[in-house]
Length: 124
Image 1 (cartoon, rainbow, N blue to C red):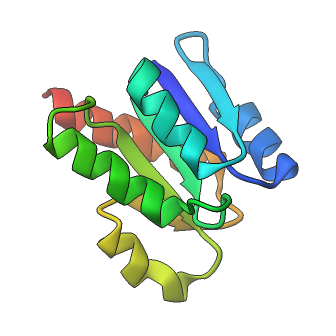
Image 2 (image 1 turned 45 degrees about the horizontal axis):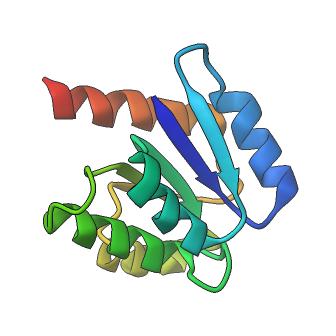
Image 3 (image 1 turned 60 degrees about the horizontal axis):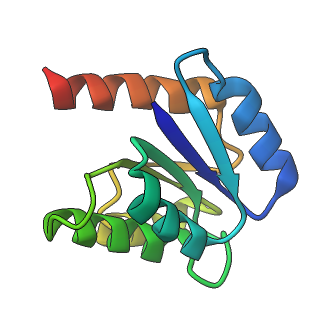
């Protein structure tokens, strides 16, 4: 499973990587939203965990772009989890078409549970 972690905060990236690492997962870290879209074209990640404030192309735009490209058949549809700075931005998460969202700091165990639940539902 290819898992992309996108956040500009190195401490948040390290915490997520530590909590989400598993033998069956390849984890790629990026610090800009545009790099997530590039990776989606090149490698087709299974899961994208992206911070809302990841860079010039923020997490909401990344999620919306990935879901739109998947609808158009340009990429496979990744599971997208957006990490919000504040719960008041939940409406933006809905606009972004993400599969799930959580407020930072995200609990890696909770993110892992979302991954298992959502991917299991997709393949059952």
